[in-house]
Image (cartoon, rainbow, N blue to C red; front, side, top):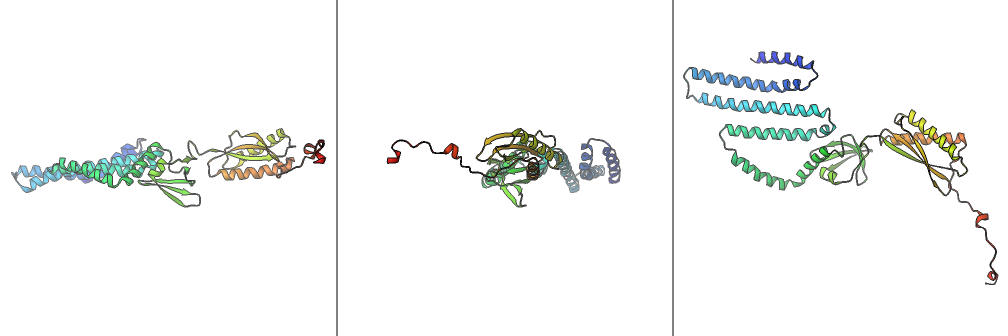
Length: 336
């Protein structure tokens, strides 16, 4: 029977590999071990039938065989459910960022629930009353919950982070305390954040759930990069704007981390002490790569301003003697 089972499963597996539906292959993989157990259960039923056939009705082997068959049948169902549910979670995690970041938590919870239900079913099959056990578990769970309150708080905070999705694995975030880094893992108890110097911050999930977090990758990794520039008061501002836009568009188009289709713009906003200040708005693919885009723009703009004769002034303090000169001396002031 094992050989027949293997032949049938192999042929069905080949057929399922040619279909776009992935759950048929998952069902076949989940059935391998449970079918072996089912064959063993069938053998026990055959043994029981043979014992009845030959008149052995009060045999100890007869009763034990039936009890073992029931337990093995429950075990086969549990193994199938465990493998199918865990496999389904892995399949969905490949499509969903939310499930991918919480795969470990969900698999652990699922297996714990399946194991608990299976244990209760087996105890019921053995004739052990599970009502006192369930009541005892309720009281024990309350005591454990009180003792493990910080741990459970971190666990449910992790579930909240996964479901609410303020952060995802791979996001670049900034914590309320000022640290920045990429989210490496959202675990049962803590969230792991890899900082730019390649250090790792391990934050309890309860702290993460209650903190103010800046997510630079939400809703998308792209972000604007403002660059402050100052030009001389004698500059032709229309000419400055035209040259600055040309340089900005060229940098965004040619730089590997610039967003080429972004409509960059220039805003003049301040009459400063020695310059007229303007802001150039660029756009980078993600937060960490904005430094290289900004650096490339500053170098290109400095070179182009020099070619066009546009002056970026040093800080200047001028004395305007005409405007600030002394007026006529009031009468009697020379006698004071």
